[in-house]
Image: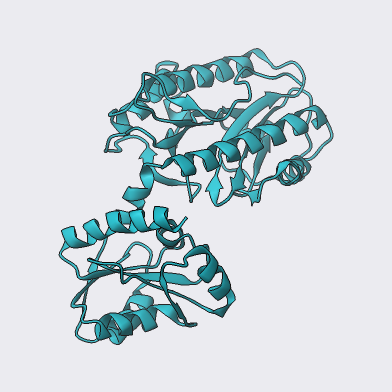
Length: 361
């Protein structure tokens, strides 16, 4: 779809012009993919402020993919791509070159500056990430497909859960089922936290075995055509105790408040506050320390971020997660997470469909 990527490059060029630069060197992998269609571990794009003379560089491993996925771009096949593009920028008369300072190391920038003779380098900021926030129809279809695959995998795994099964085994089952139903791979390292481990939001699955009376939190997602899903469900193994039901209902209530707050034009911090206030009012402020959610797309965590003090407004066609949690040290925890898309209508559209009611297995 070269025309889609060309349209994105035109929008990016406006950001280059707004900065007063002659060109931008795009080096962050997801940003290169967004602007060109090429998925590569070693690729960069020299994007002029005007015209169609963008130059895509990658090494021989990806040359065939670049010719296939970015046929409208001039291609430079080179192992050390950044230095070569810097030299090319100088040769083309670029005097101010924007670069992705948040992604580039000091060493790499030093090499870049040495190669870019008579060129001043200026930080570009996260301009491409800002463009990526609002998804086009094709991107939303891919995210929705990734969410469907995640739901389908969980539906297969839930009946398998039983006491004596290790966290690591559950994580492996989720990863395997995502592959079976058609995912490219897991979107990130699957989290399974049982019992007291549920108090650790990003617990790494281990050898602890599921027991009756446990709450089990599963945080996972499928990757589909470069786009990520991210969902979390907490289930009970056997009849839950009163305190477990209490914190589950609290988290579910907080999530509903966050979902209801999602709207075109709402401040990101206000969405976080709507859910956080529910948990704080119940006396668990110290048990919910992470942000309420984040954007998803070509990266599992991308703009916008929904957290305390976050600024910026959400708009139509921005997908985000809503994932409040309550974590009680040495006892356990609950997190419920869904992917939603902000719409111009009254309500955000939920892409993950597995029930948010407490499942007792």
